[in-house]
Amino acid sequence: MKLLISALTKVIVGFLLICLLLFLPAGSLNFIGGWLFIALLFVPITVLGIVLFIKAPSLLEKRLKNKETEKTQKGVVALSALVFLFGFVLAGLDFRFGFTKVPTVVTVVACLVFITSYCLYAEVMRENAYLSRTIEVSEDQKVIDTGLYGVVRHPMYAVTVFMFLSIPLILGSFISFVVFLFYPVLIAIRILNEEKFLSQNLNGYTEYKQKVKYRLIPFIW
Image 1: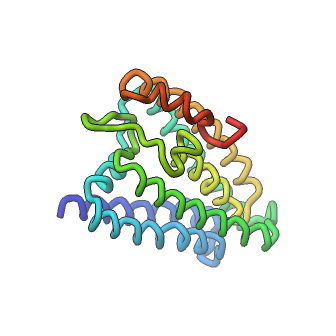
Image 2: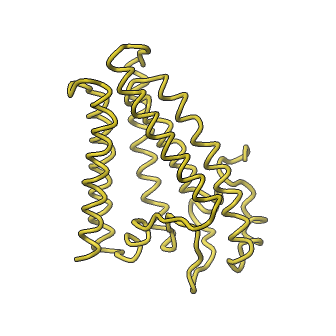
């Protein structure tokens, strides 16, 4: 019951916060891009949350945990929050004042990218039961090197980059997209710090890095 209440609370608070950040600057509830994004975000979140609650409650509990203790990671989380805050507010303002206009075809592609990325996100969670939103190593944790983890070392971060870069295009704002471009940079910093921690604390991770060469995007980095 405690886990259920915690999950529902986070979903409701997240929904209200995003509505506030989008529709208040937009000055209208007729912000279609805002409603489209909210539907694409919260419908899969709800479905995935229900599945995890039934099938893997321990993984759901890990995903709800978001209090970092490591200094670099705390900084990345804080800066990421600012990216989202300014990105959403600017998207709302862009809708109100019409600074930029994203072509419909680009919005459609962005929606497809977002949905595909979320499906891959769910697959990553299926492959790795140790996934947590904080940097930690469980007592019985093992290195996962199959599936998407055999392609890049951080598939969860990889899919979130594509997912989050599609958000401002769904919202119909190129100005917001520029702000969201800071997110991949922050993820790169997080990955470098995380790999240092895992190399020191997770048996077999150094060998895994030699086996899977790329961190985020194949043949690039």
